[in-house]
Image 1 (cartoon, rainbow, N blue to C red):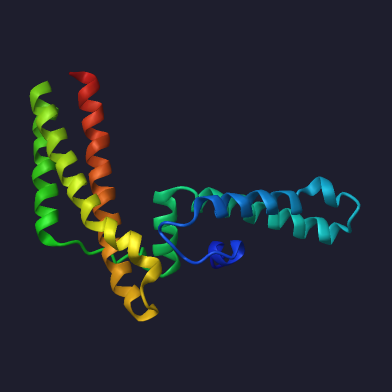
Image 2 (cartoon, helix red, strand yellow):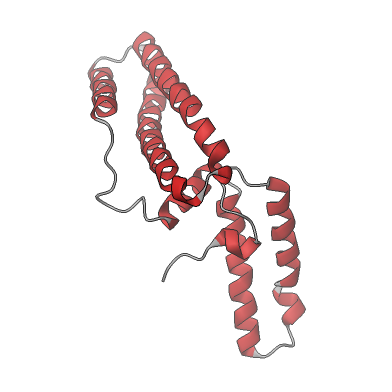
Length: 179
């Protein structure tokens, strides 16, 4: 069963930077409209439909109100997070491999100064990624339909890189608590 189009459900354009106030307004309006208590005397079929719509509303808001989940949702909606479509540039993979090697060294020789240096490297890499993708995310809404696939490819690359860095940060957090 395909994932519903949450943007259509809310009557909003697909966007990495949606109008947060409009999103919240739609969520609250539909929460009132589909609240099961207001349909207690309806037929069992209608009650099931209302329950389905209330759940859809909750899921839509949960996903669209969180930037990372929204990004994954949009990419998934366009079929860009499927297995086998997750190639990353080799220079980035080499950088990550070097960071992972440093993490392995910390496993055998804990060193708080090395943890700090590695954390700083990851922060610099993350900040570079963020500043590079921001214009794409902010300008996505205004792109003509035919230019969106290229932007989505850039966003997918950013998203996958960010996931790699998140795993490294999680490992670093474990080392930081040990040091």
